[in-house]
Length: 141
Image (spheres, rainbow, N blue to C red):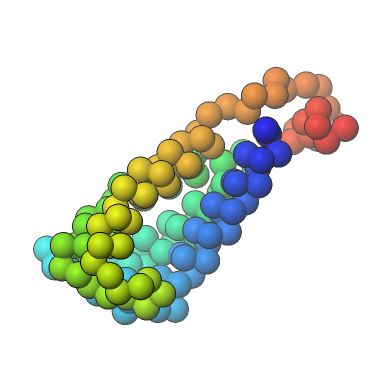
């Protein structure tokens, strides 16, 4: 089970890092879905992209992975208004099929992402043991 959890950690980390990079490469796509009430949409896209990259990398660094997971939960909550704006106003962005029903069905998945990140806020199931490496677990021996 631990190996599966770690595989899902890598999948989440890589996905977030790629999406974070896209915030810089294709920032116009993300600005489109920003709620108009928020100031500095381009800057907010860059900030959210930066924190997606930071959180993705942080998930893979044991000393900060729990803090990174908590940060990602906050990020998922912070970007939710953009997802709502996309659904309410039927805003198309590249890479996502233009179908308003899909935009609405996508909203509950934010809770899935929050839960997924939350799994990594929990302490490891393996009790720490004396080791030469501070990151070595019983499985690695």
